[in-house]
Amino acid sequence: MKSISSLTQEKRYKDVVFDKIDVQKNLLYNTADSIKEKYRQFDLYQPADDPSAKKRPLIIWLHGGGFKYGTKNSKEIKIWSNAFAQRGYVVATINYRLSKKHPLRKFKDLIEACYDAVEDAGVAVNYFKTNANKFNIDTSKIILGGNSAGAIAALQSTYSNKADLQNVIDSNKIIANAGNYNPYNIAAVINFWGALFNDDWLNRTNVPVVSVAGAKDKIVQVDTKGVAFFGSVAIRRKTDALHIPNDIKIYDGYGHELQKRFNPFFRSGATKTRWKEAANFAAEFLRKQIIK
Image 1 (cartoon, rainbow, N blue to C red):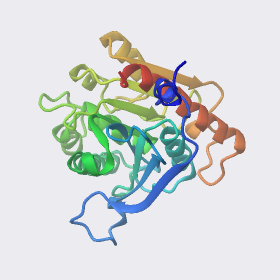
Image 2 (cartoon, one colour; image 1 turned 180 degrees about the vertical axis):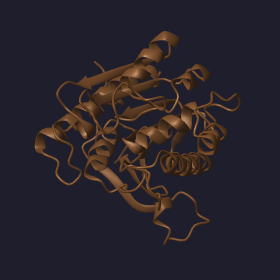
Image 3 (tube, rainbow, N blue to C red; image 1 turned 45 degrees about the horizontal axis):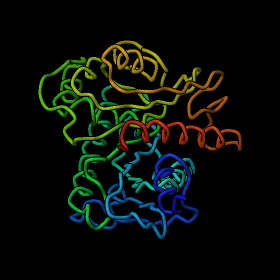
């Protein structure tokens, strides 16, 4: 007969195995910053009384808000963080710099804001690598996740580099640059209704990606929009062609944030149920691809 601990190990990272979650709030992922600089703060979620706490995968989550709004305190962030922590993950939900310009209306402002978010994500990754023993993290299993703008930043952090984004800012063109790719050695990406600026960037590295999106999303379209947005369906098509491990869950009839009609101020119980389903779907993918 298998012991309780061995059964827990079999289900760990796929199913809920912990009832209680410990949350530490408003920590700093760059200790050189002042506590007043809230954009470098993070909340840490981890299972309480974890008997296998020595080396655990880390999910770093970036919030949505169009690079103009949002924080790590969003309701959906808490739902996903608890869902992953209950499976055994360490989850760090981070704030990052928000734009003082107009990223929701001007393409250049959007790219500049994404550049800053990517830079902050890199600072966070390096912080957790440096402090891996403190947080019992397996540095070979650092996963970047995000929703909306946060997913855009997570994707760009993995499949592009600063030179790519700088080229876009300077020339307003998408250039498939050579150079460093996956600079932070990310093990996988969780893409909730995000997009890449160039799907050719997927040629560079074999990092698995799992996507969830609404088929009627008008904020970040699920396929290709113009020449600079490649949504979840476009990412699926390209990763299939390149034989990069991937999966996708599309919600027919739903839009951004898996809502019938996108409203950043009101989220129904049914929407929250879909958010939980998205976490379950991502966990199933990660268990197969990342947790060996």
